[in-house]
Length: 615
Ligand code: OXD
Ligand code: MN
Image (cartoon, rainbow, N blue to C red; front, side):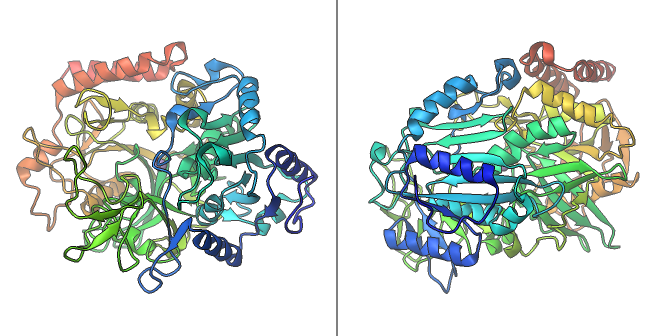
C-alpha cells in the first residue's frame, strides 16, 4: 500500500479508491493531495529551484517567476501520438488517430507499471470554469510532475474548494499523467524534466468513459490535462451529449463609446493571433476591448435562449516568441509577475528573453538559450542557420487575474451572453477582410471550412496550400468531425434559440507582390466595430454571393493612413474566380468525411457555387 503524505481531504470513496489503485500500479514514493494554496505553489517552485529543475528569475524584474527547460524532444503537443480511443473507429473519424480502448489501455498499463519510482504522485482536484458554475466541470489529475502541478494552479482552479463542490459522490473526469519511467531517459540531473521517447508517448482520450491517460511527455497540452484533453477533446463529447458547445475560441468583451457591451468569441487555428485579439488595445477613440478568455469557450443556452460562455481556464498558456509591448502589451504585462516560463532564454540580469520581444540586449551580452547553452546574438549553427535563443514554441503560463485587460466579470459563473462568432485563418488572397454569413447554416459552412495557408517551410506541403482546420478544432475534436458539424447544425435548431451572428475575418491579406494590406493588431478594432454594428442590425453592408460584405466606406478608417482607398477596395473586393477555386477546395475537404457529411452543408456549398456562377 503506497502511503499518503498528507491527510486525505475528501470522503469521496470512488476518488480515493481510484487514486490508490493508480498508486499501486505506478509505485510512487507517496501520494500528495494538492490543496491549491499559494503556500503549496511556492513550496513546489522552491523545491524545483533547489533541485535544479527550475531557475528563479530576478525578483525585482520578474517577481515570483520561474523558468524551465524541457528535454529538446519534448517541446510541443504531439498530435501524431494523440488518440481518440472510442469503442468504434468510425466514431473517432478520419481526423483523429485511433486505437481500440482495450488494446491501448493494455499497452499503457505496461508503461505505467512502476513509472513513478522515486517520485511523488500528486493528486490535483481541479475545476474547469469558476468553481461551482453550472457550466463548469471537475477533473482530477494524477501526475508525477511538480511542473504540471504549478501549471495546473495557474491554468485551472485547484484544491479543496473543488473537492467541496465534488462532495462525496460527485462526477469527475479522471486524468492520469506520467512523464515516463525514470530509467528511460535517466532521471533529471541536468536541469530538464525526463520524458519517454516519441514511440512511447501516448496522449489518450477515452470518450465513452470520459477518461484521459497521458504518458511520456511533460509539455503543455500533453501534460496539463485540463486544457486541450479535458476542456476540448472530452468536453466536445459531453457537449454533444448534453446539448452545449465546447469550442477552441477566445472570448472578448467589446464596449462602444456609449458604454454598450457585446461579447464576441472567435475560433482561429493555432498561430493566427488569438491571444493578441483577445487582449487587443483599440486604435479607435472611445472603444474598449476586455479579455474573458484567450483559447477556449464553453457555451450553454440560458433561459432567454442566448448562448452564455465561460472561459474554463484560469490563465494564459501563451506562445512567447513574437510577443512584445508593441504586439501585445497586455500579454507582456500579464507575465511580469507570478509566471512560469518554459523554453525561453535567460539573460545575465536574471530576466527572460525571446525572439521578437523587442528588448535590445547589451552589446556582447551572452544569454543562456532554451537548451541551457551559452548564446550570443548572430550565432549560427554548423549549416550557417541562425540559432534561436528561445524555442519557437516557448511559453508563458500567466494568471488571468494579472492581465490588465481582464474583464471584471470574467469569472461570472453564469457566463457572458455571446453576440457574435468569428472564424478566421491566414489567407493572403481571396477571403475579404470581413464578411457576415447569410444564415446560421451558412455560418456553420464557414466554420467547417476554416483554413490557413501554410508555407513550404512550416509543413511538408506545397507553399500556398490551404490547410483546412474546421472550427480550429482539427487536433481537438473528441469524435467524428462530421458529427461535430451536425452538432453545430443541431444547435441552430434549438427551439427559442437567439443565436450569435457569424462572421469570417481575415487579417492576413497581401497584395500580389507580398505587401500586407491590413495592419492588424489594434486596428482590428475597426473591424470589431463593424461587427458590433451588424449585431444591432446596423453597419453598412451589401448582400453578395459569399455573404454580407461591408461597403467600401463601412469600416472606420479615422486616423488610419496606412490603408489607402485602393487597399480598402482590394480588401473588400469579391474575387469571383478565387472563390470558385475556394468552392472546389472546400468540396475536396468535405469529401474526406464521406457519408457522415451533413447534407445541409453540401447544400450550402452548392448554393454558394450557384450564386458565384451568376456573378
Ligand atoms: C494552443 C494551441 O497551444 O492551440 O493553444 O496549440
Ligand atoms: Mn489553442
